Image 1: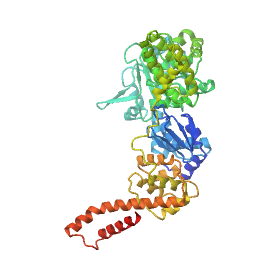
Image 2: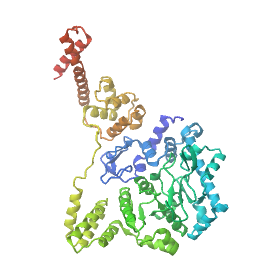
Image 3: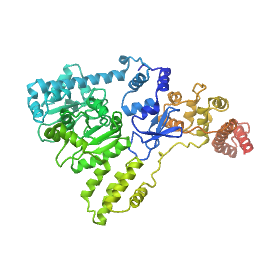
Image 4: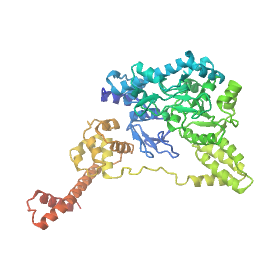
Length: 580
């Protein structure tokens, strides 16, 4: 793969506003020299995610994820590094010239995306132009769709038989193994067959409007009703939302999104003229999906089925959306109703009425549990509080949370202070949990390392007095070795200066952690003391290493006084005794 010059990477990072870019995915607030927020890579209620723009680094002390801005975007966007660099470079006005044909991974991705596009076109042609798709087309018309909607979503038909797509791909120059790699074929006992058969096809597009996967629905009630593409090199369910590539403009314009469960919910709602619906691709909502939505809106309405499973999915989704800084409301659907059936029966007016009458999260939870429990009995009130308080606890805004404390107190017929006390006791102990094995930022190694990266002028002096080889800590030795390879200027050393010299992911994680710590204050004399403490530590380590060899040799009479090990041992003893 062609190498992008370090100067180009550094210029992109210099122009990029790290806080603004990371802030697209999670809300950040200033905390000293850094910014603090909820981690977009895992579910959490207490902020443990820190961004230090001066150091060009981020770190989550909950899940351990950390690195620089490029790594953040590779992780959150699920894109290869060159693509992230090109996009960010374009955003900040730095053009990147990388020949895709020379990039094996990029060329492979491009070929597989073309394969998926060809599959989508094949399925669509079968539906709208072939007699094989006639039954499926009539089915979609009965479901209230028209040809314009079918074209817009590029719906298709996968015929029965099991080898139609296989023959289409191989005759077009693709290997069966490539079809299996992207999940449109499957291999059993050395034989490849079509993954989807006798199903209406829903192509799944990524945010760049590229086909990355497919969903398929049967025409009757046979099971499984839906069958979806597996996770592949190209496709991650966690990082995509069905319908977003079509609806992101309208979502941004209206500043709201409608979250539904199924493909047909999205298609039917769009068909009646409400272009803000997206679906979570047959999986529970994820933090990556909520971060993706937050690029376009801060308001989401959830419209899941009214059954128990739908209610449970709604409750789980609430936390994710609130963590991403999204305001959540819940649409009320009658038993047995879904957005697809509502759109077919009442059209645009019915969907808009559903959106306009959506209730807040806590109102939804209160309403559900008021119906569920007998609030005239102490046990019912206790059960109600047990169900409602966790939802109350998830509200990030303290003003909104207090307003609902008052509401819950009225429902229970008790003083609001008692509700606040129960909520506070539930929250006790919720502190920032640091990951097991966190590096000791108070050790002399950590303090000297942080001084060196913050003060290049002191680092030049330190480098003349010690070498990385005297660092006794296995965790710090690779960090100092990397530091010694950096060309020192007049600016503080940053993550991108050190990262190229570290191969171990654990060392890179330790580096990020140290970069997020504020530089220790001190004087040149303090730095000299730190240097001396590391020398003493190394001498003690070396003395203890030599001790058994020397004592055993002396006892056996095999170690003469002029042996270099004995000479070093006695010198270390005298030096350390003098130091003490």
